Amino acid sequence: MTFAFFDAKPYDKPEFMQQGLEKGIVFRFFETKIFEDTASLAKGCDGVCVFVNDKVDKAVIDKLCALGVKAVALRCAGYNNVDIYYAKKKKLAVFNVPAYSPYAVAEHAMAMLLTLNRKTHRAYLRTRDHNFNINGLTGFDLYGKTVGIIGTGRIGKAFAQICQGFGMQILAFDKIKSGDYNYVDLDKLFAKSDVISLHCPLTPETRHIINQKAIEKAKEGVGIINTSRGGLIDAKALVKGLKSKKVSFAALDVYEEEGEFFYEDKSADIMDDDTLARLISMPNVLVTSHQAFLTNEALKSIAQTTCENVLDYFKSGNCKNLL
Image 1 (cartoon, one colour):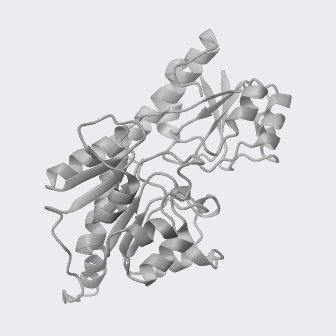
Image 2 (image 1 turned 135 degrees about the vertical axis):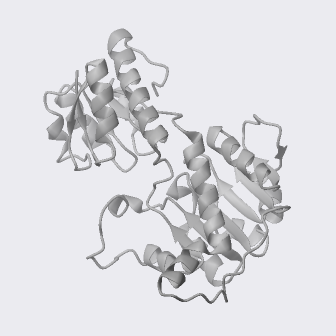
């Protein structure tokens, strides 16, 4: 079997090449993302392998089907970038990797929280210039603080476990209650949480779950962490909340309009997204480039599960991660 591998990065290739060799799958690596004009690169392939910022819309699906492509293998958990309903209509199989390393994402969320709270990123820059002044670097104890976790799937639970290790109190919100947590409604979570961390999928229901009204309901000085999907936060409302100091800090590994920027070197370009530029310029905002998943363990798990999905589907016409 041959798969066209879009948006390929150097860290993707070793594990996928190894897994492909072991399982009889040939990957053709392309640095470009998939869209209507690049979908033709999949000519002669049984399927395509895509990531979070590849847009598999109706035009791409039509092109892939015309080329005889039979499957779209997502090497990520989220699938809001794929028109699932149209793919089903066109009988194009789509499968994902629902779990790779929940600890990778949860640990990154905590790393961002600790960085912003104790301002280690700013201290690092100061001491490199031999500036050992600690004014302005005051943080707060996490012990005894309340963290509101929106979404208690695998990642949310892993983050809750870490927070409990710090002695934090947990408030949780999820439509499906699946843990021994103090589940509350969103209004109470907003009002009582010192820190809010997002670990839910992006759906029409959760889109902009953090918006102007949510921020108005939130506790004064709340911190917000998002390592899930950018569309969960109304970025313009977040900027207003930061400017008014209602939001004391924001840790963002994802951004609603990240597709044009994340995973790319834009250091020589003028940032034309005013909202993202404003967020990055704020000293109490930490933006990372959708890297929460990026651990050796997660990369290996992603490659293994993706290849297992491919083998299962092409052997039986089905697989456990078929969407």
